[in-house]
Image (cartoon, rainbow, N blue to C red; front, top):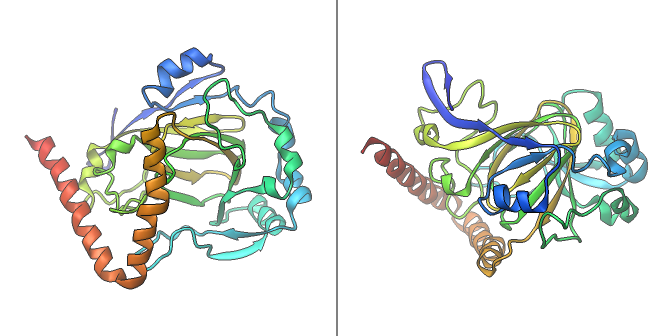
Length: 302
C-alpha cells in the first residue's frame, strides 16, 4: 500500500500480520525463514508477567537503582552512541512516566541483574527459535511522546519484543532497505528523522524514503513482535509504556560473524573517527549515503 502525506507519495507500508498462537513449524515457515515480522498476541498471556508487571511492581522491586535516561534528540557528528542524557533513580523515572507525557526513555536496561527473581515471571520461547542470549533479557521503557529513532540492532540478533504496559507505534523495514532509508555508513542509524512520520516527513531532503517498503504496527498489552535480524525499527510511545526484548543469535556462522564485526569492529572504527575527525568523518558519511540513495532513485526511474 502506498501512503500519501499531502500531495507527496510516502513510504510504502503494510500492516504487520497478527496471530494469537502459532506452532513452531508455522513460525519457521512463514516468518523466521523468510525474515518477515509478525505479532503473536497470545505468547505472553500465560506468563505471570502478563498480569503482574505494572508501574508499582517495578517501583517496589528496583525503584532504588540508578539508570541512564535518553531524550528525543537525534545523534549528530559529535554525539557518542548510547551515552545517557541524564541519570535518575528508576522509581523516580517510572513515577514521572506514569504521571503524564515525558520525552525520556530507558533502553537496554538489564533489570534482571538487580532482581533475578523476576526472570521467573516469563518463559523463554525456545520452541520458536534457538540461540537465546539468556543472560541479557532487556527492558525498554518510555514516557508518552518519547521516541526511539530509526536504527537496526548492532548485534544482528532476532528479537521477540513484548509490550507489557501502554501502546507504541512501530515502523519496520528489512535490512536491505538501508540505502533508501539513508543509513549512515559505519553506523546503525539513519540520517533522516522519522519522528511523527505519519504527519510529516522531510521527503525533499530524503526522497528515496518514498521507495522504502516496510511495515507498521501498534503494540498493546501482551503483544509480542518478532523482529528478524537486522530489521530497521522506529518506535513512538503513544502512551507511557514498558516492554521486554528477548534476543536470539542467528543460526548460521555468517550471521554471528556479521554481528560480531558490527559490534566490535565497525562501532570501534566509527567511535575512533568521531573522536579524531568528527566533522570530516560526518561529511564523508553524508556524501556516501546520498550517493547510495541516489542510485536507488535512478533504479526507480529506469
